[in-house]
Structures are given as C-alpha cells and as structure tokens.
Length: 299
Image (cartoon, one colour):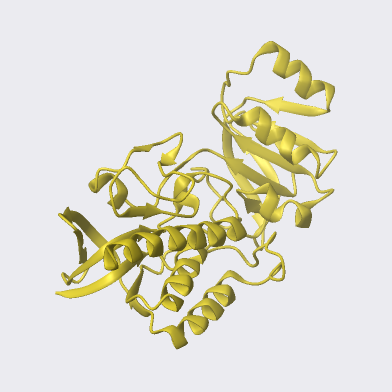
C-alpha cells in the first residue's frame, strides 16, 4: 500500500491549485485524475484574470507542469471506493490498487443534467451552454432561448436578459411560475413557452430552430440550459459527508467537512462555480490541510 500525506481526488483547477501549495509545503502529495471534466466540451474558460479565453486543457497542462519541481505525483485513475480507518483514509483505484493518506481532498466537481432532447448533443459546447457567466458574452445580442425547469428558472432567465433583447424562456412543459413572476418576465420582454420540445435543429453545431411537439418552429441562435446538477463522485457520501442535491457536499469556509481530515473544494460545494473560484478554494483547502498536518507533526 502506498502512503501519502495528502491524496487529492480530481485534477481540475481546485485539485491542481491545492497540490501546488501542498507540494511547496514539502508534503507527499498524490493527485488522482479520472480524466473526466465538467467543461470537456468548452473551447475556452472565462473570468479568470490573466487566463481569460485559455482552452481548459491548456490550463491543466500548465498546472501539471508547474507541479513538477515540488515532487507532486499524478495518477491517471478513478477512485472507486474510499473508507476512513482511524487516522488514515484508504482509497481503492479502478485498477484495484489501494492507497492511503492522512488527509483527503475531494475536488471531484459536479455533473450538469443535460437536456434529453433530440439534436442537443450536436450543439453542446458550440451553441448550447450551461453557464451565462462563462459563455454569455460570446453569445451577446443573439436570439437566445433559456431552457430551464425548477425553482431557479426565473433568476436564470433574468441573468441571460442582460445579454440580449431577444430572449425566450422555454420550460419544456407546464411550469410553476407565480403570477407576479410571469408579469415581471413579460414586463422585461421575456416570452414564456411551456410547450414540449420535440427536437433542436442546427447546422455544424449551430442552433437554427426549436421544434415543438405541435409542429411549431421558432428560430433561435443559442440555447442556455439550467436543469440542475449532481455530484461528480459518490466518495463524499461514502465517507459520511453531508451531501444534498440542493447544496452539494457540505464544507465550511476552510473547505473542511464534518468528517475529520476530509476536505472538499471546487464545484462540488455548489458555491460560485467558476474556474478562478475553484482554484482559490483549492488554495484555501491546502492552507487548512497544511495547518492540520503541521499541528500533528509538531504536537
């Protein structure tokens, strides 16, 4: 069994940022990266000062390169099981290898629930997006459809309203929208369509029409969707961390969970889901982990 001071599960911005700090603190650190990323269809990341417009794979490449002087190990694998054994965490890889660490950081992110509509897959990442903050500027002044369900549909629509005057809110069936909210949407020029969507039509990844089940077609250029999310990994729940669909995996301001020695950073905590925030949370978690290890080493 290989033993480490810290194992980080997740090789995105949160995990790599934490590894950088902990490596510089001279801890033995292993990053386990499954190779699956929430932004796998994204062509560029945005809102990261000095890195705006950078392709996500390039950010990961730079991050890994900058870990090399500090002895951080990277293992291309998925962690399938985790258990807490007194002062250590024991992790099992997809290949059956067993690893252990004194502290564990989960930077496993979340998974967006995607529209189950014919034609969506060909549009995703080209003219269909989930985050207005990430892609709204590039789609400004286009004919946008907000495809959303659930209690957050009205705030989602108004977030998109800043990017275009031509916005339709499509709920793909009847929606529970209060009368006052419907009036507010109408007042700001947002049409609500509650008909079922039959398919999305596009060319070379670019949306051209939405087709409804009654045969009506509406011309659109861009789709933003908001259908909810789920955890990218079940490891937090396995270890006894408090997890909910609404609030994600629960961690305090220092990224510590209710499980001693277990930390969570990045999108999995359902805070502001931006690359720069995930990187900052990774750094915050690393400070807290280093403090805990320091106090144990010099008790």
